[in-house]
Image 1 (cartoon, protein in one colour):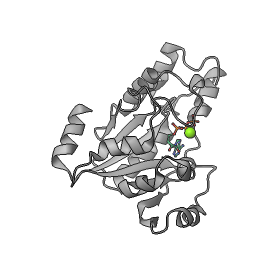
Image 2 (tube, protein in one colour):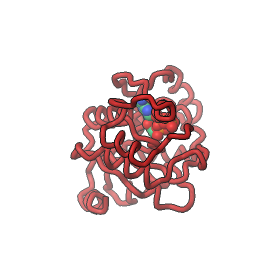
Image 3 (cartoon, helix red, strand yellow):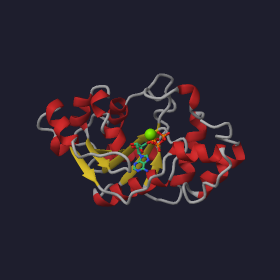
Length: 216
Ligand code: ATP
Ligand code: MG
């Protein structure tokens, strides 16, 4: 990551995709989404940013940041364009997307162009995010389809809250994968197979550390 950050600082002009999430655990839905965004938007890198203390989630119910970081690292190992950042998990305070994007945008001109990749469920909540207007100015959003969430009315809400910002949110259709981390956690708790829902090294990590055994 240090290598990556210093490189993007110096050269500028890079297209960097950021994907935030709890990643408890990372799964094929995240990876397919990131890879499709990388290709469609000509991203040089996609950086996964596991959340430290997610502002919107119950802290007690989430695996330790180090577990989530390591599983995410295992999952991206085979993709030369994918990286993982410790930026959020190393913070003691809850972090917000605006802080993360500012960190990677580096405040330099010309800096890298930041694309924030989210699923449909997350983008529908963007108007509740801290400083979302600044966020829309600072980066471009790639909102991907996700089974169970409709983006049909998203632009109407965007026009109401942030007129003239349509060009900052791109909708991207991806092959539908109805997998979620919740689904995987529930299956592990029930001793059901999670093969092919997450990369094999992640599956092995979950087994080795006995994660999700008590449900949740
Ligand atoms: P949980 O069930 O614990 O909420 P999750 O599967 O939603 O987990 P998150 O870590 O909450 O995963 O999500 C990180 C990002 O990935 C979010 O922007 C979310 O919308 C997106 N995402 C997660 N699963 C999918 C999927 N199957 N297809 C498209 N996007 C997804
Ligand atoms: Mg989620």
